[in-house]
Amino acid sequence: MDQPKAVLFDAYGTLFDVYSVGLLAEQLFPGQGQALSVLWRDKQIEYTRLVTTSDDGAHYRPFWELTRAGLRHACKRLGLDLTAERELQLMNQYRHLSAFPEVREVLQALRARRIPTGILSNGDPEMLGIAVRSAGLEGLLDHVISVDAVRKYKTHPDAYRLGTQAVGRDARHVLFVSCNGWDALAATWYGYRTLWVNRYQLPFEELDTQPTRTGSTLRDVLAFFES
Image 1 (cartoon, one colour):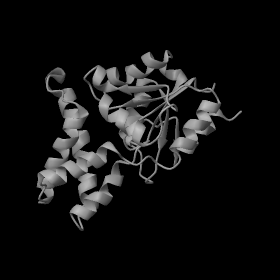
Image 2: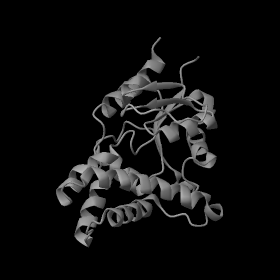
Image 3: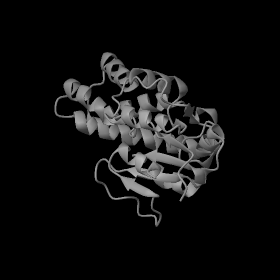
């Protein structure tokens, strides 16, 4: 196949480590940090699906609000005392998530090849702007695309369509990269060429569709551009 003409990355879980907040969670709630970070993430994603599919999106709320709601639910579920101060600390940490160590290297390599790049994310514009600046990725991305523009979260086709509109290419000419199996699957269904970055050695979704390729780090993106 021809080389992709552009690369779009999911943000949370792919470029930015959503579980890095677990270090702070462990300090605040000893012995519960990992459980909190996992449950928080699961509830956050569950809420995106709930507000997208219910009543034709009439209950849409920005990703920041769903992230806070997910944190509050997870703490109640685990019986943790989420004071206003602790909530502020954890939410602020989420604004400044750590980028995975190879992110800058990969984006610089794509820029050297003159490949347009971008983020296509559930995150709202303010969240994404802060995350990109905090990780020092300014100037390395041509597009930072938020689904907030259509008020529908991935995996809705309208969310994925934002990416093709931004880069001006058909989906089959664009590589979409995600560490989230459900995201890689839905992007494949939409028509993107896909790379699932399987950082945690998990099985892929059992729905009779595979991503274009599977890798273990973002460096596997560069294999699509080897001559």
